[in-house]
Image (cartoon, rainbow, N blue to C red; front, side, top):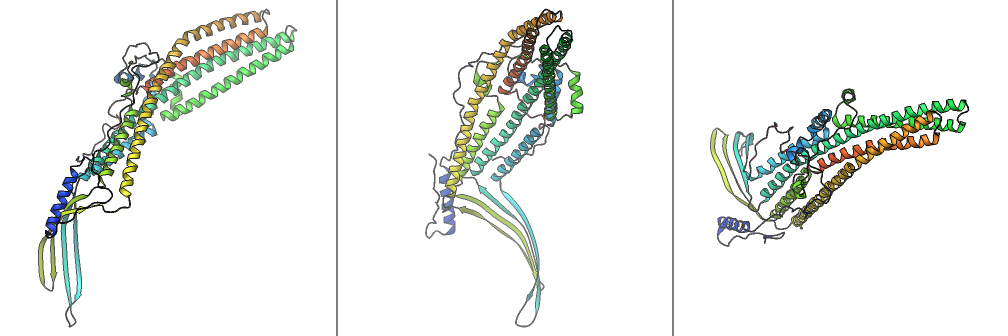
Length: 500
């Protein structure tokens, strides 16, 4: 059980033994307390996870599903432009730059915390010249004095205030790096999803453009027949309305593509004047990802997610703060000393010498109106919050993988039927269009066939986008194959810092 002195405590000097005995007794008292088990809470254990994924797993691809394979996953797409866009985003994104700055802040905090276990030395120098009235008769004496010395102070970390503070700072430094990795994975996934949405949008523009052209031809043919008395005026109005509706749909889809290009420009930090030629140089088809196999063991994948690892470090940091707050309620002892060279000259007389002092200082908390106890309670509450947040995120992460697997399986199984439907409705529409051109079919049958063909073609494009997006979501939910060393920070000089 950890010792707890409460908000007050102290040591009394033995009567008749003098200051030396009191100091010795204080040191012995602190050493005895130091033997108490001032332990901080331990790391949070991950909540129980199912033994296997419940959702169907994707078929094995050419590569495994380890972190190294996922790290190179973008390069295995059939679209090199996607790789360049991801690289551009990770080089220039402002959020990543802020995360990198937070890493440096955390490293500096760790160095500052580690310095607390080492002695402090301060140098000082002083020179004075004074005029003094002397004796019963009027007269003055000019005096010159100087002093140069070094002061030292070393607080002995008996109960682990510094050790626990360093522990918390170390965990937060690691957590900042993990947060950088998580942001990098999320940014890559967001860029890829936006790029896939753009290619799907362009494919829909092609579908709607073909529909608009077909509607325009039908409207012209119907109006010609109406003027010849072969079609009613109502059918002419219907044909014009359908052509206008198709044109409106096409314009709206084109505007949506422009919005996505703008979003992609912001994500990649590439100006549109540079981005648009690159987009135009590539095919407007959706990029096809390489498949990868997912292990059936959930814990194997969740252990490599940087966001979960960062939250685990936050739990360790909160535990260190609990230990530091508990240790702060105990007495502290420090060793201090100074050495100085002093010179003085007055009235033609000079004197110099070396002065030094050394000795321990005992500080005992006697009364603080419950401040230290409240700080312990607050630290324990922050630890409980961090632990609950970590456990909740682990469960959510498992659900994210399950959902990505379900969406991927559903999209994969639906794609063949969606392609068959698009081809069948397209063929039926072509037949109805041929009949209407020779005056056999009706306009209503033609419009119904056109609507079905349009919906089926658009549905196929959207389903293909969903399938690729499901692979991207699965990539992100499995940790993205992040590397242990941030490339942007690997070459940065690291200032060594003392460790306790």
